[in-house]
Amino acid sequence: MSLLETTGLTRRYAGLVAVDQVDLAIPEGGVHAIIGPNGAGKTTLFNLLSGVVTPSAGSIRFGGTDITALPTYRRAALGMARTFQNIRIFTAMSVLENVLTGLHPRMHAGLGSILARLPGFRAEERQAVAEARAALALVGLEGQADLSAGALAYGDQRRLEIARAMAQKPRLLLLDEPAAGMNPAETRAATELVGRLAKGGTTILLVEHDMGFVMGVSDTVTVINFGRKIFAGSPAAVRAEPAVIEAYLGSRLAAKLQAQHGG
Image (cartoon, rainbow, N blue to C red; front, top):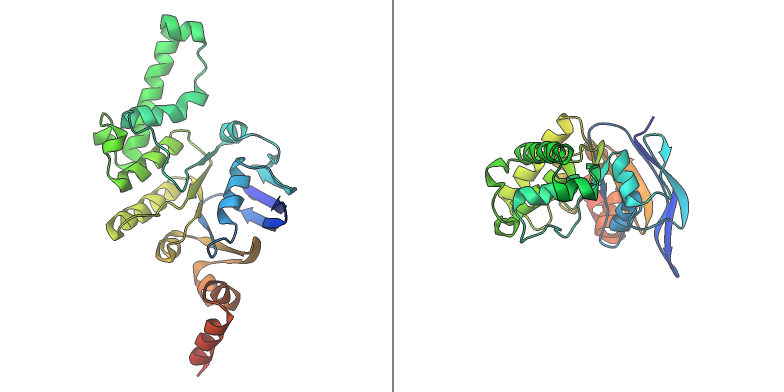
């Protein structure tokens, strides 16, 4: 059974169909990528999966549960976590405090217990701090826990977002453009980190423009264009698929390359 499955997933905006009857079957384990040209519908698809927007048609199942109508916090409780294309951190807070914000939904102490700092709340707080520090260690930021998040280098801010998501101990981690804006050294570090998280047992689904990153880290790749899924397979199969080449390069250039290869 697939960990994440969509059937006929569709999102319309007035006359525009941003995601058009997309069927996905993401198995548990490994790294799975969604790619496509600019405007293909990748971010809208991610927003549908994470509950940021609601589908116009179709269904989403996660771990066997229909989550089509569930809000984001309910999906998070089931084991889904997400980062965003544009970095979303609290720059005036410390690195550790940023990760703790991701643990807030898992804390159960009531307002009275918090205000009075009762033993139950203090124990829960200590546990949350320990889990936040473990998440920072997972991404290599344990030595920067007390720094202001705004003082981190760009690549480390991306790592901080991943740490905050991983603190929730998700079954599925959705990464939206994890290598966006990175220099080559940061991209290599991000590739290593994503591979390490997957080896640790977290299933990863990512959207990314950097094809070197995608091909270097992914087990399977799904290609969408104009909102529709046009191909799914291994990175090697994707590289050789004429429909994928045409989607990225245009039919005229794709035909020229194929003729050259054939010759």
